[in-house]
Length: 112
Length: 113
Image 1 (cartoon, rainbow over the protein chains, first blue to last red):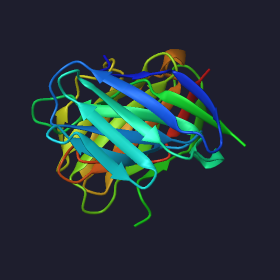
Image 2 (cartoon, rainbow over the protein chains, first blue to last red):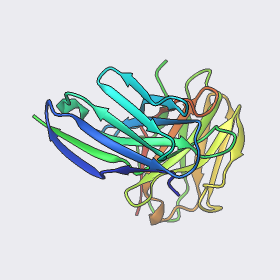
Image 3 (cartoon, rainbow over the protein chains, first blue to last red):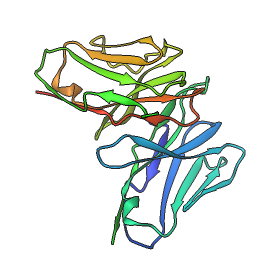
């Protein structure tokens, strides 16, 4: 079963606009991670945010984490056509903290 | 490093046949994970290894599925006999020290007819 659930399921925007994706999860976490998957490819790790962090930046990516609401958001600023992909949040699924469970993802389409 | 390498990229087989998927993790990574991805169920964790030892196989759907990791540089996922409902994309991923950022392979798209 999924621990994280992304919202929306699909998002279509124009180049230059910002894209925001949300993730809600059920149990307490040590960290939350975001991955990108281009069509026909494997997932690529984007960013990890720890439970004691509220916000983290990496280039055009901004991730926030609200542990009280058990939610996270991924913001992509000034989107490009190359950002077209599916985006997944992932949380640790076991007490040992060694395996990730993924949501079903948000499919982002950026048109030029 | 060439990344996580999976083979074959595509596999089409007939129901009842044995299928073997292969994975070479990144050198130095001590964890290896097998996932299955379908539209209906998303990404499902099947099994994972730590230092070549299977740690959790609770996600393996049936006894028809088995996985091995004979050494640090090679793992296999075998389905015997295969069924149409096994059709999916199977991913292998590796990491260093657990869930701190996985590196995924490009996947094997399996079609069972």
